[in-house]
Length: 179
Figure (cartoon, helix red, strand yellow):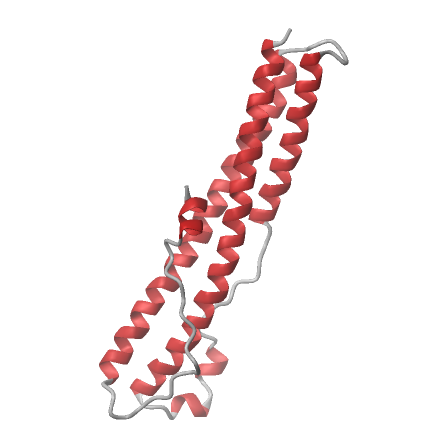
């Protein structure tokens, strides 16, 4: 479900500015703060999506593994029979599902904001509140862009794992019925 949402573009597309925005002291600092807060909300949504993906990947892997374990126990087709071949196909689908689950779950590099070493630097501390929020907004924009791409790659792998798990179930059902 999440994989489909990410593919359909629930997370808004990020338009690339021609260059980083330079703060204009005539702008309202409160507007810059509000823009920054809204950008941080999107940042939190991407982070939440990563957590949801982790939980779904674990569930898919657990169910696919349980089915792969129970299938051969419930039905023992004769060696090289049609049922045996369907069971072997199900085992291959489990292996593919497990590989895709690993692709979706394996540790990835996420970009985190703010870096205290950066914002504690004198050039940041000398900024007006509006200029500070403007610079932070650019940093959050970059983090959201990078993290969204990572989450989308993970959701695509989860989608492939689901397809493999469904194929595994289908093949095991045919193997069990073909006795």
